[in-house]
Length: 165
Image 1: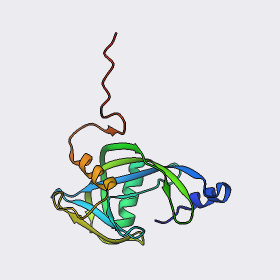
Image 2 (image 1 turned 135 degrees about the vertical axis):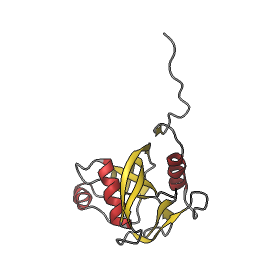
Image 3 (image 1 turned 90 degrees about the vertical axis):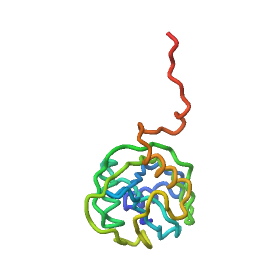
Image 4 (image 1 turned 30 degrees about the vertical axis):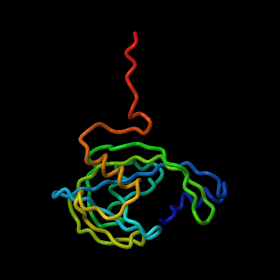
């Protein structure tokens, strides 16, 4: 994954210490209900498309930009699927980041899926019932995006409303 310039600038001041960052993931569906996935250059695994917002950029703008940059597919965000704080990620260079991920369900509206930058080895459309091997991160986001329900907040799934007067 390419490191945005503003993060490189921050790292000159804080070194490899934990850096708290926003992240945006996009679960993209086409008209046939297929899911757009990218095979990541950094891990070699298939996943949903995502990235880090630029300073001042809204999550929906990030989803549109990242999907196009990585896959050449144009999308329209349709809703928030989930909001979740991820465990810290330790990178080979010693950097540590922790992401607050906002996952958006998106609809493809144009473009042809192809590798469009150096962050992906492959990109492709997959039927929801015939996905390639995915980690829990991608699977949980796709599952939540397929459900017709409200936004899901980590830790709130079992919460009961307080009905005491």
